[in-house]
Length: 323
Image 1 (cartoon, rainbow, N blue to C red):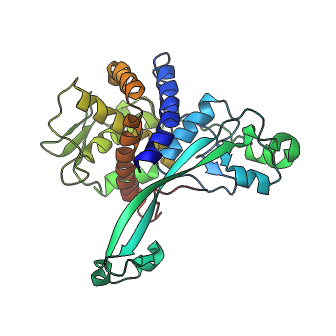
Image 2: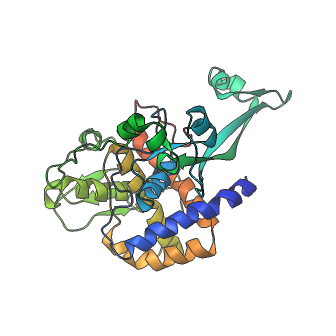
């Protein structure tokens, strides 16, 4: 696994550094800009987990017309050529190896899921990190070779007016049913927070925010923090404002909120108070390329927990990738 991380981490980190450097100039620019839907492959299947964030950022920073990607093999199968000088981008995913403890026979996940609880105890499960690389459609000759398909894939929808009254039905339903894993109190005030000691989220009322997106953005950030509770994902507690561990937790919450927002259909911007951590994040990314990958592992787990509560019937698999 370490060799795989060492191979792909520099490219992922380089992209994140570029993105954060744009935030130093335009702090209110969203983590993930609206780019005609979630990043997806030629079949229209969305990518998963942190790949959503990274490919959306790549689409924005490279000014690609649409977040549609393909492997080299898929390009050839579709009669397309990669333009000279183009670089592929790595997509990471976890492949689960399941092996019987005694016979060492390996089975796939579909077979494992059909086993009884007792039978499952006879198997070892080991996640293995894998990756493959993809190109955007603008890195190919699709515009010339198949102009009709290119026009369809790059067709932009009418921008949605989110200046006032934006509604996210999934989050609203979660709030109404009190369906999150800790209490969420909406009350008139000027500050949103999550208390680890009380295991409770407090957030101002939606009508106090300039837009619905701003409300959901703030709420998702605090919900992301709450996933780190010892009874959930057990990220480090007793954090001190300003220290490296606190800065790391803020980046986990920022990217978790951004990933959940992208999945739910809206873009979120970094919180203004986190401007102080920009320099720290950039320093860590530049000095330790695997820093981002460690962050993304926590982001993937937190986002899966949140989306499973908001959209319980979607059966998403955030760790998978779409080839």
